[in-house]
Image 1: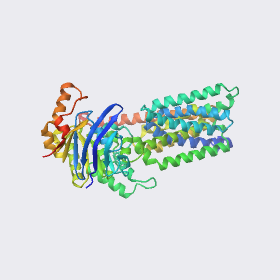
Image 2: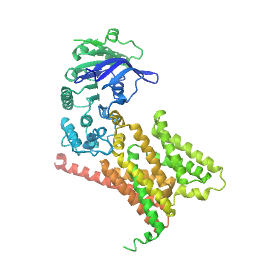
Image 3: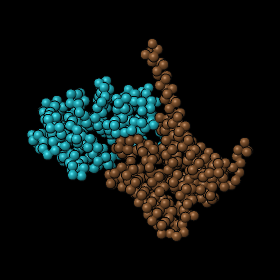
Length: 261
Length: 286
């Protein structure tokens, strides 16, 4: 079966800075892949490259069988961090979630009953029914996050990319989001999610990737967590106050990043 | 009632009223996107840049509108290009492009010996001088921009709120940005004769800013902005007849008054809401 995401030696540069260095991995249908790593490790860059928002510098990347920028409209849903937009924008919860349908609509198509139904289902999935008419200026951080996820669900995508959706949300919201994502994955939707929270990775993901510009480890979440790959970079960041810039990643993991149970 | 409509008995006032309405509604509709994208500077910038087109058209004895429109659209596209390729903010890009184009206009104008009378009306506007042919151009261009706004509504809205996610979904945010800039350029040109390049920026910003004070939804903001634009244009024109003042300046003064009325209304509503919360809170009832 063709993987949903197929990356080989994927390199992304911003001018002279290498943000992603030779990432190699596959993502299959119905699989949730978690990506952990410290700030600046390339998590968001990886998601944006898969979404076609950032061009790769070299290497191979196929998403849903195509070049990322040639994927059919509405196929990829990207959920950014909530700070990425201006929440004083004049819109209600419904307005924002309904935007998820826009890539599915041609210029001349009306926002029809099917679109309203998809929007309502998405709101239901994130437990936001009853708040449709609330202006987004009045939402809490957790509610903003749920609105973003609902917008992605309304899009009915074939690939869901989430950039740290649990940052700053309470435990209840985190559990609700996890239930939503796991249900989607069970239904066959492939998901890639960047996260900082190593403690809950087993309940979220089928596989886990440790990223520090290079893929240091990838495999079963428990095995990856136990491997120490993430702990080593976290310790370095804590000790030195910055990411390793010119380091060689953990050699064993760098050379053989796939960890099997 | 008939006495109230006396100013509109004159054909020149009827033409002015139609032109003012078209300009006021269109500028304020476009203004909704302009202020939500934080591009308040763009109207001013493109208006000044179009001055170069007017001077070039004057030198070549061509249609002023055409000259202004060509330079305005080129400047708008240049602003988008420099913003994206130069990785600089839109405001910086506007600043670079408009000052360059405006300076070109001033340079060319300074080499002309007999220019002032014709160019003055474009600098400060003279809606009372709108001729039937001008009116056709104004209404035609306004209709074109209005149709574009209607057709592109969803894409413009999505890319205004969240261009990154819209792009990830397959909506070309960059294309929408260029299209919006061109539409703003055309809108500025349409507003040239009615209020002039100096004041056209106000109609692109103030009605929408007033509407923003009164609603937290996009569609009502869009509608209110157009209503304020229409009221300002017709009201300003009407008042200027009796005040014997500049019609363009009066239109802008009316829209400024509307803005402060909206701001006051919002403050009153917020105070009332705070009082309600205070009175109904358990602490207050003890």
